[in-house]
Amino acid sequence: MNKRERFEAFLHNQPVDRVPVAFFHHYTTQTEYVTGLRDPALFEKMVMRQRVTRVQDDPDILKIMNDVLMMMPVDVSAVKGPEDLDKIVPPSMDSLYVSKTKELTERVLDYYKDEDIPSFATGFSPVFCLRFALMFGLGPKQDRLKEFFLAAPEKGLAALKILEERINEIHTMLIRDFGLDGIYFSVNNQNQLLPDEVYREYCVPIEQEMVREINKNGLSFLHICGFGGLTNNLKLFREYDASVINWAVHAEGVSLKEGKTFFGGKPVMGGFAQDEIIYRGTEEEVKTEVKRILAEAGQTGVMIGADCTVPEDIDERRFGWARDAAREFAEETSSR
Image 1 (cartoon, rainbow, N blue to C red):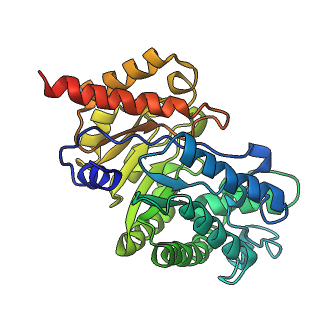
Image 2: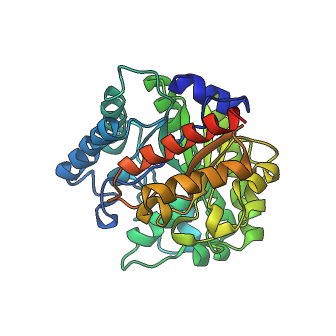
């Protein structure tokens, strides 16, 4: 099977020659995130390092990493308190942010122009965008999402809808104009950023609608972010009509096999903790873990990956060990 054939079989819960493997990592440090609009050198670093991945790793699927453009810049200058949340202003479709997002997408896709590889842009929920804008746009860094949202939930909802509209426009543009397969859509309510009942009432319907909007044009790859071991209530996301589901297996204590059942048999991705065996283990340990995961979860509708992004400085040859193990496992089980 080639990459496209393997991915399509995975997507439809059909047999594969070996399971696909997809590990992702950032290309800049955390202090360099969201700096791409004011630092052209860091933007270039992020773009060029993704060329290195094409050469060193030759991945099964492409997720375009947008580190230095990670959070959509939102103007919160008119927000003086919770009652002003509906005064936020997202970037326009002719803004520098959207222009650089297009450039990033075009240039990374060009590295793969000689093959048909399943390709996804990275997107974030309006909840995370609003949290980030309030945290960094209102003076000294302070996480104000919970405080502001609970004080004026209807205003918070209005803000989310403003962001939803613009993010949807960007997602649609990226899929249609660049031929992407879809959006790798990151959501989370880590350690109850908002009380679960509030998240369920105000945030879940918007995120569900955004998944449906992605599905109109392509595929929705839902990433329930458990970065750094932070946990989510997976029940919040159970009814999202996503094409593929990824969650933090180790943080949540829900294996790939259990999660596939929990999410109604949808294709699933993951299995590895982000900074343990895949990052520190020997080749033998990595291969043993791949085979352990597959022995439990099976090879149908399963993709090997991690809870979240693996460390930025990882040796990408490790991903090849995982692919080799998946191939070996398929050969071993077919001969039994």
